[in-house]
Every structure is written in structure tokens, then in C-alpha cells.
Image (cartoon, rainbow, N blue to C red):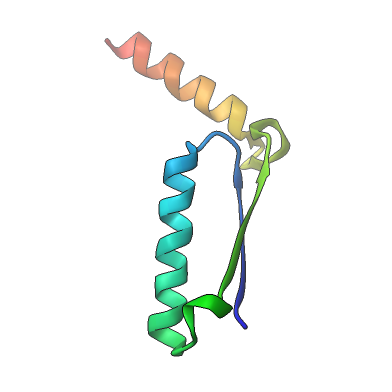
Amino acid sequence: MPLVNVHMAAGLPADKKRAMMESITDSMVDSLGVRRESVRVWVSEFPMSDFMAGGETLEERFARLAAEQSSGD
């Protein structure tokens, strides 16, 4: 039974998460030849302030990118 845990920042709409989990399920069925009923997929979300890359949290990064885009207009 394939178990797939996706770690991601919170904020994606429920319909997008559902579509992603369906796609992952289909991929497991196609690539591993397992029964659809045996595939388990769950999402572990975290706040954007709880993930850092390159010394910048996701929250800070998105704020910076928004500011850069608005100053470029």
C-alpha cells in the first residue's frame, strides 16, 4: 500500500489540493500497478512563517516579491 505525504505551505484552495491528490493517486496506480483503493495520500500543511529558504521565510519572500512587483508598475 503506497503512502504519500505531501508537505506544503498552507493556503492552497481545497479544490487544488484535491486535484493534486487525485493526480498523485493516478500516478501511483499507473507507475506501480497497485489498486486505487490501496493508495493513501495526505497533505501536511505548515504556515508560511514556518519555512525558510535562503534566510527568508515564505511569508517574507511573498511580501518582498509583491512589493517588488508593485514598485515596478
